[in-house]
Length: 146
Image (cartoon, rainbow, N blue to C red; front, side, top):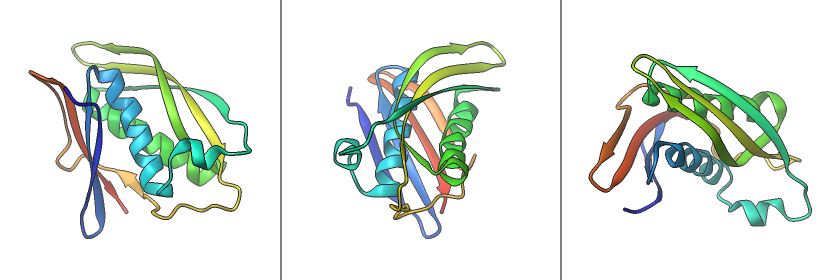
């Protein structure tokens, strides 16, 4: 099974197809994907000369798919209100029940520092949202408004 992400352009949207060996890896790939699309940079190059900060986030939603939307919206919120990019993440806990999914993660953040996003997102949406297990691992797709 492959691991990573593919960004797909729409007229006023951008979609991510995310791959991983576990649901937790899908969330990590989503954080990496949105950072890459916002900055057209890799985290190592972007971080040169800066110390990252680490911030904990806890989210819960009705399902893994809805949790993915909340996750991406949290990352967008941090850019817009805190002036930070989430360049990576580590999922510390992911629980999926019959009617709830919960996530606790550490976000690796860097300040914008006069480097505004090349592509700014308004929000992740529920349009064409999917999050599922396949014979090769996990795959998710999410559309974001630009």
